[in-house]
Image (cartoon, rainbow, N blue to C red):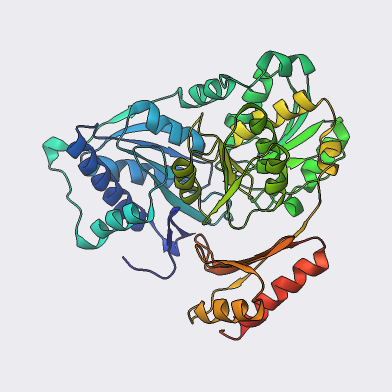
Length: 459
């Protein structure tokens, strides 16, 4: 099943539909995951059940049917939660004490992509070791069930409601206080699964909601990644409605981006930073984020005496590090917020609630809060992955910048007191990411250009 057109990582498997990712591939990987999950469950006396859900992608219904049949074919009972968000699916795995969960979503990738995300019984994505163990079944053979041991489907229509209720029940969330503020909020769902959860959450928090692209049909009207350059319509909506904040989510609703009351997208790195500001007022402990996240998280944490620990890119890597160090909050600079009190997964509805709590507690506009902190210029670049190994680039960079602190957990990150550059192969696309941050765009671009120059030599 090895195919260079298929991306395989800690996030699962993903590819362009009809080019690498086909119903046959989906069925085989889904069956392998199901067999792996229920075999582990049987060893511990757990359930032979797998939770299944999908986002709104055009190819989602097709792969949903294929995946459910594949899971039943190896003897797994399927708890089907239908159209949903990735964090809702993770919570549902924990709620049902299931053997695992399988999400059909390519997250922020363009419309022609789809993917399978594999979730373990603890609600976390599979670790590298677990993924290797599971994928071995694809190559070595899948133990399909006989006619009398096939799995059966069940349907759970309450998963999103439970998710919203769990967010609203967070002990330091002042629901009544937020409701009393009657915030005006703008929201862009980009025709993803967020339309099924975010407006309902906002209404329960007493907000006046102005939303666009709520139709969950997967026909994205813009590039679905919620980065600043893709949020022009949301910026206009904030200005037109006088909203105090604007929210945007990716198709599977684990990432959250913000637009300020002035109608400007403030950068997805601020989502975790501002959420950290709130949580550290109520909880003491470490903060965990990945190597490609802005220093603004360090600044927000330092305000409350918090310490930031870095982990490799990838939600499961951050979650495992959070568990290891006992973090009170963590996440990634792409807009992903993780709160252990809810679950160890990136969660955009959680982020929405925490940001409204911030506005409630601070009592001033988001634009003013942001302006009190240093602004960094972060440049995120990418280029085709070279055929040769990246080790030569890493060695050359370390030699060129001998005064930097080097971190080799995930590619190479070189850091100084006020800037850093991170070069790593993407786990979701056939590219190399080059990300740099510095006090000015010119200085950040210089770090990126140096990385590109060395990578070009390997092409």
